[in-house]
Amino acid sequence: MIISKNILKYFGFILLIFLSISCHKPVSIESPAEYGLFTKNIVVDEATRSYAIYIPKDLGNSSYPLIFELHGGGVYIEDMTGESGYKTPFKLWMNLAENEKFIVVYPEGLNGSYDKPTWNDCRGDCIVSSDANDVNFIETLINNISADYNIDQNRIYASGTSNGGFMALRLAIELNDKIAAVAAVVSAMPAVSDCNLPNNPISVLFMNGTNDNYMPYNGGYLSDPPNPDHGSTQSTENSVNFWINFNHTDTIPTTYTFPDLDNSDGGIVEKFDYKNGEQGTEVVLYKVNGGGHSAPSIKEQYSSLFEQYFNKQNHDIEMTTEVWNFFKDKTLN
Figure: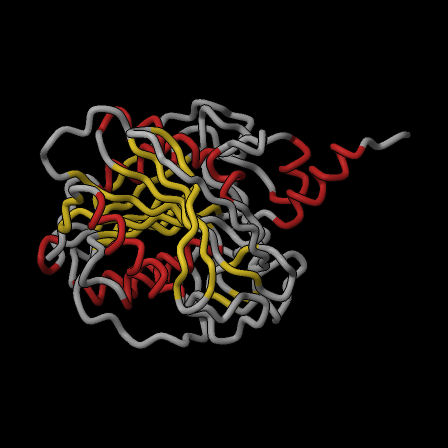
């Protein structure tokens, strides 16, 4: 069988897509238009950092939310926005931004040991990610973007997947004076943490697959096969309980089971909602039964080739829609 260069490239992409690995590929534009998607550079801590920003039409004069979408290890900006041509649930943030009127930003991490983008999250036993001060990077972006646009400072959010989800959880701990809520997809709290306890209550969402072969639902070493170099994670249950206890939410959740729109995707999605936390905080778990290491999506479905490596992608919910529904009523405490 003859394998084309495109197939080889695709194999390389899917093998790296959500691991904690890294490289840097800066791009920039000279004169941004009034609205649309643009990729920019910024120097932070003497390093050139890249990010894409989407500005919807007709924002108006009132302030509007800002959402950060943090990639998984090994994923470039253009893979997140769909410009690379690959399927990506994350580009759907731009559709929501148009309808709901907010700005979405796709930052890019710096290189780690595998020469692909990564985030320096709280995993103290991970040795493959970069050692960049990514909290400072995100905080600098908040300040710079707020200087150019009328951002609602009480409605800034961060969502991330895999390595990006771990990074979102770091922001929940270390930047909760500026970020109102975070969402961690196929991610959990680290078993060995470099981070201290958070200072302020903050709303947190988890969305994890029970058949995730890279980020084990019940905890342990990450990667497939498990690799100590990638660090270790707590179980999803323990991760949820950490934030329930910290925020002092209800301990008995309200529950909802989503309709099984695709009975070939591995299983159903259950939602567990822990409300009434301090300062109005909330903790939510989306338990993706049978789901693998990917963000659920109805519109952006990964290929069977992808699922050979990362197990089933759920097609019963749209990750971006669910996360936005969680974010939109959260304000900085």
